[in-house]
Length: 118
Image (tube, rainbow, N blue to C red; front, side, top):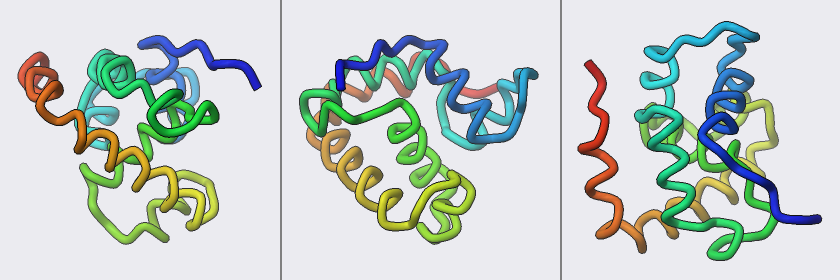
């Protein structure tokens, strides 16, 4: 499997899929579910470089699952159902991403300040 090309649009499209938005875009819903806009997701992806720090199989959906877990913080089994995946897969990806994000936290503080929800 080759490296996946990831862009800001990747996070918008994947967020719309996870949230069942179809073709419509609802920025407020995206922010409520994931705690950041697609641009912040993309910058976080570029900062932590999960294809190298976690796995070449890492995908934007895995970062969004992690952000949803942190933002909503309900039972992992429930979030796995919402993410339309198996609980074990959800758990494994989320905790891999949380570890890498935690290790990169000193580089990430400015991302939180870039775009605050209105």
